[in-house]
Amino acid sequence: MTLEKDGIRLLVGALEKLDRGFDHLPEFTPQVNSEAIRQILDAVVDRLHDNYPYPHPLYAGQMMKPPHPVARLAYSLALWINPNNHALDGSRASSAMEKEAVAEIAAMFGWSTCLGHLCGGGTLANLEALWVAGCLQPGKTTLASSMAHYTHARISEVLGNKFCAVASDRRGKMNIDALRRLLDQVDVGTVVVTLGTTGTGSLDPLPAILELRRHYGFRVHVDAAYGGYFTLVDTLENEVRTVFDAIPEADSIVVDPHKHGLQPYGCGCILFRDPAVGAIYRHDSPYTYFTSDELHLGEISLECSRPGASAVALWATQQLLPLTRGGDFSKDLARSLQAAQRLYQRLGNDKRYLTIVEPELDIVVWSMRAQRASEISQRNRGLFDRAAKAGLHLALLELPATLLSAHWPGVNFDSDHVTCLRSCLMKPEHLDWSNRIWRILDDAGGPQPQ
Image 1 (spheres, rainbow, N blue to C red):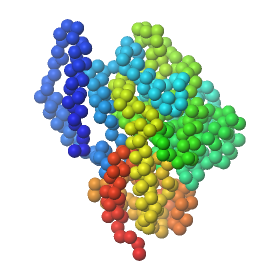
Image 2 (cartoon, one colour):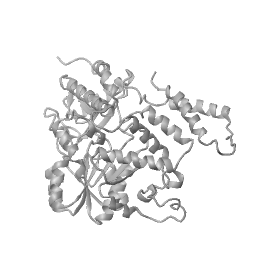
Image 3 (spheres, rainbow, N blue to C red):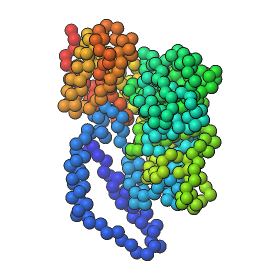
Image 4 (cartoon, helix red, strand yellow):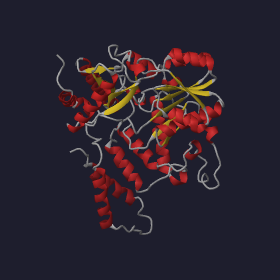
C-alpha cells in the first residue's frame, strides 16, 4: 500500500465530534448530490494517476515530501469550517493555532520574541523579508549567492530593489572573498544567506557573513526554506552545527513547513527578530479588524485571505511531533541525512560515477563518468531514463562547469554546463530502502569499468 488510508476512520470520528459542537443551532442540512460528486471523484482519480509516485520511497528526485497523516487529517477537518486566517472574526481558533505554531518554529531557532506568520510558501516568505529590508534600507542592494534560489533575483526585480549575485566556491557556498569585494564596491542593504541550496543542499558560511556584518552593517536574511529544520538534528558535522547555531543572529528567517515540516502545499513561514517591523505592515481596513483589539494576522502579512486549514494542520503536527532535539521529528531528519551520506559513500567508491560535494543535508548530486562534459550529460540523461523504467525516480540538475572543474580535473569541459543527477532523500524511509535504491542504480549504471 502506497497511500495511507487508515486515517479516514479517524477523520469521520473527529468530524462527527466537530458537528456536535454546533448542535445548539437551528437544524440545517446542506444538500449534496453524492452521485454526481462520486463520478467527478472517479475522474479526478483517473487524472491523478498521471503522476510520479511521490509518497513512495522509490521516488528520490525532487523536493517532494508527503505530508504527515495528522497534517492531512487536521487540514481536511478544518475545511468543513474553512477559516480565513486574515482577521479574527473569520478565524478565531485557527489564528490562535497559527500564532502558537509559529512561536514553536521561532523557538526552534532560539527566538522567544519576534514577529512571524505563515504564508503561501518560501517564495512569498522571502518576498516579505526582502520587502521589509527594502523599506528599512531603501535604495540599497540585495546580495545572494549564485547558487541561491532564483526567486531572490526575481523578487528584487518585482520590488524594484537592486540585486547582485555573489560568486560561489567549489562547494556551492557563497564565496566570502567575492562577498567582501562586492561589499567594498556596492552599497549593500541585505545579504541573503542560503541554508540548503535547492541544487546541492549547500550551506552558505553564515558565521563568516555575520563577522562581515559587524563591519559593513548590512541586514542578514537567512533563507532556510529547505534546510531550517535540520537545526534539530544531533548528528550534524561540527562545521554544519556551527552554521545552524549562528541562525539566531540573523535579522529574518524563512523556513518552509511544506518541505521538511510535513505539511501540505503551500505553507511557508517568515520570522523577523525585531517585532517592531510590524509597523511596516500595518494598514487600515474599513470592515475587517473590528471584532477584537488583539492583533489580527492580516495586519502583519502581505496576503489578505489565507487558509486557516494550513495553520490547523501545522499546529496538529507539532503537537504530535514537537520541534525538539532528540525527538521523533529530529530523528527522522537524521535518518534522511544518513540515507544521503550512505548513497554518497557508495557512489564515491564506484568507478562508474563522479561525485561533487559531500551532502550537508539530504541532497546528493553525482554523475556518470566520461571524458567529456557533453558525454557526461548524455550518459546522465540515459541513467535517469533507465532508473525510471526500473521504478526509481531521480532528478536532473544543470551545474556550471566552473563549479565542477575543481572536482573533476580529468574531464574535458566542452560545454559550459553539465546535466547532473540529483536525489532529495527527504523521507526517513529512504534509509530503509537504500539497498534497493542502490541495486537499481547498480543495474541501470551498466558494467563496471575494467
